[in-house]
Length: 239
Image (tube, rainbow, N blue to C red; front, side):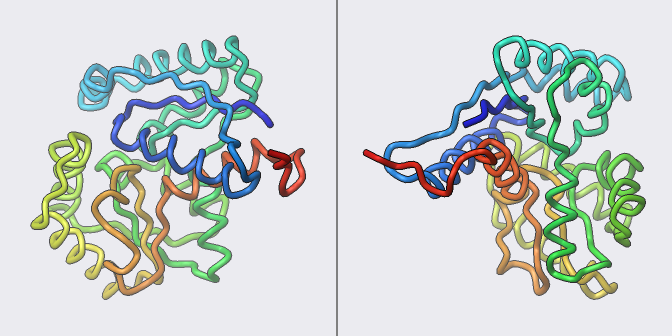
């Protein structure tokens, strides 16, 4: 089994889901008392969020690159950056290490393609929804037509992520608003909706949206399990 290096803490609420989902995936595949080999670098999110707000992506990238290098030195065979937004600095993070960085957009795009979907709605932080690093990757590499909410709804989605979900607050009123925003994306032609922030799955489920949904946290975690177990048989349980 390969050792997974998680760069988390952004927020720790979603990193908790990564840890659970990866271990559950290994348990399903290997059985018995098996669990994942994980190294976790959990950063303090407050300084990172301040750098995001200030637009200082170079400094934010330098911080995560340092965490990536530390995980590689500690023995990680590959890396998982447990956040959509900070894939804004994925290239800067990757260039400091020799091991693979599993980009969150790739398993997401694969799942969308498997459903035969081309036009998708995207919910996430304003950085993920507005900047090209995420949308353009999905368009250029995978031919997806990515739609985002209007200005006011982008602000709403972003605020709920930082003021509520990242702080463990699950508010029914916010769930209703997210359902509405997702519904409007569907009404505008989206054939699926990406939960493009790793906390959104704490607020919405597949049944909240009338079209297929793609929870990036779950998809990214599943990709990590696949890579970690790629050289093992389907079951090695002998306990």
